[in-house]
Length: 443
Image 1 (cartoon, one colour):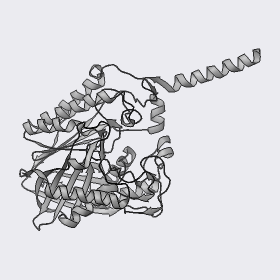
Image 2 (tube, rainbow, N blue to C red; image 1 turned 60 degrees about the vertical axis):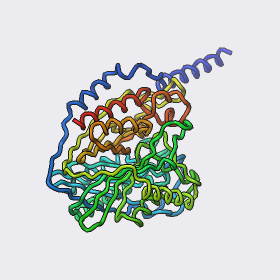
Image 3 (cartoon, helix red, strand yellow; image 1 turned 180 degrees about the horizontal axis):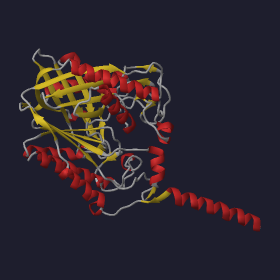
Image 4 (cartoon, rainbow, N blue to C red; image 1 turned 45 degrees about the vertical axis):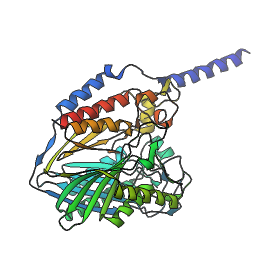
């Protein structure tokens, strides 16, 4: 009996040690009292914006096929293994914009996210190629049926197809190819902002009749030749295709860009908008139904314009804000989370930051978190008061999980439990950061 008790005591001790070293409690202290909160707002106020005012607009666009030579794991939903067929080829797309003095560029990937490791590799490759713009802005379509190979770390290997240096090198080289193609086609352009009501095709995916962002927003580039490109955003998640679908696909953004290019534009680039809390109202989850959903969105874009503005002053300004956060808060219960060392082992670098770009009176903000579109209406009201139009996108080369309204933090939704990575209060925090940025830009 004594030996049994010793074994039991030893086992209990080991279990207790494991729990104490891997699990801790959720920090619910007010976020406004945190040192990092005040430091970040101080940085926001003091960080300078770079840029210039020129005499004209120059823009170009290009793309490169990044479809792997052989099947790789699909990324999105749960692990599904390698894709079995190519439903849609995958591309990296680029748009460059200059006023003759300052040049910026967007790089867009038909991937789930732009992981910090991929962003760093692309930034270094572009810099070494001699094609680096003054600001390089990352975006993604957020397809849940895209390719893998760019996510390091234990969780990357377990659930997201891991990290393959050959695939990363391939994505870097194709990014440079797309950028060079865009630069080589630059010509004088006019710029316009367009906003379209597509509220029939998106909804708040957690609370019925709750607020959501219904708009497609476009930045349109028109060359003297009449050729046009569109960078556009929408907040519906690219989750139309079934989680059991085994083809490589760009989901509805792929079919929507094709429809735009067939109708009016030479080139279209879809950047995921404020996708937190937002689901697509697709009629089904087969490729045919997803194409029908995209066709409906295309019709709305064509017919339901609510705002149009020309960006006449060729002024470009840009900046970046590194964001301080709580310790990682990947929760396993309402009040328990894994310890930061374990989070860092599983998920690695998250690179939290916001990218800011002002083009004439259009302010573009790109987030590292999947920020919820429920905040958008108030941001847009403030922007309008400041004489600005506003576009917010996500997947900027950092990834910090979801940014959702704070009142949802204790609900049992995956967006506020498994994929809300940095604890309570971030809804208010990011809302205030963006409001402050809008006010600062409108001075």
